[in-house]
Image (cartoon, rainbow, N blue to C red; front, top):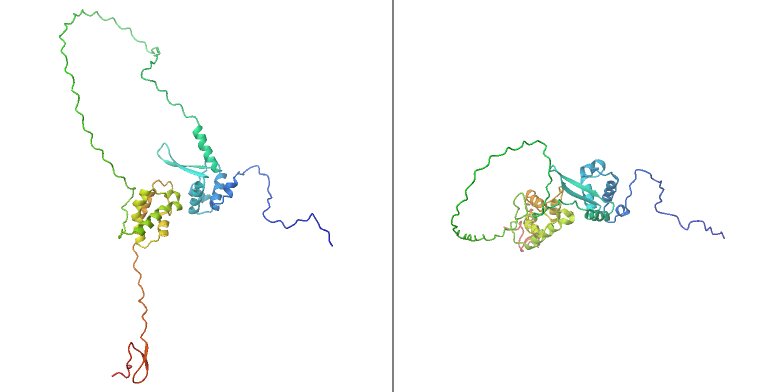
Length: 326
């Protein structure tokens, strides 16, 4: 019997093996929480690592990333939205002194970095406000030597003596009458303004359809699942539901409506209700022509035998065939 070799491996090794070298330059420390995120797509994780590797001040707009990476604009936009959703990217709009609006982008290596940055900003000492001098405070005056020599004033001649004035009898002045109070105008409650829209929303021909109205409200509420920027309030949903009903009435499906309203959203979207109202009006599909249906199948007449020649022919009632009929 052969001897047992205890130095031999119990089984063949499998899995990846790392053969690394020590890096002294051109490397980036990235968290495994970002690279191995279980919910983000591969494109989003790759974009997060790439943005972490570029130096500060590098433009990372969609157009700039398309030039440097072999990915389309739609995939890059979706990846940036995922990074912002999970706390690895923050994009805000800032107004410059010249009136222009610029996008300020901050990349975080971990979602906790955003919380730490906000806490540091809140703990930073505020700039001292200008000292406010109270009205009753006495401000000391400092004498300042004049820079231009002033000529001495000539002595004025003495004024003639003035006789004492004769006191006139004091007449009591009448008391002022208080002004009549002016009645305040009644307060008018202004109606709520509807969301800004470029044109009038289309309306369905048959508005009395509760099932279709419920489906239209669900379509508008589900838009935020496609893009968080399309979050609508209840008032906006009630206002836009009629336009969605017009699309559904013309044969458009719920998925087609969502795809048309959420496609190619502009950057820096501030008024989602106005954008959806414009698209509902400008992209209203035409009504579908009713399909021509084939006529219903009609069963042929049964076979019967001719009463004279016994030949079989089709007829709804028994009788003679065409050859035997007079």
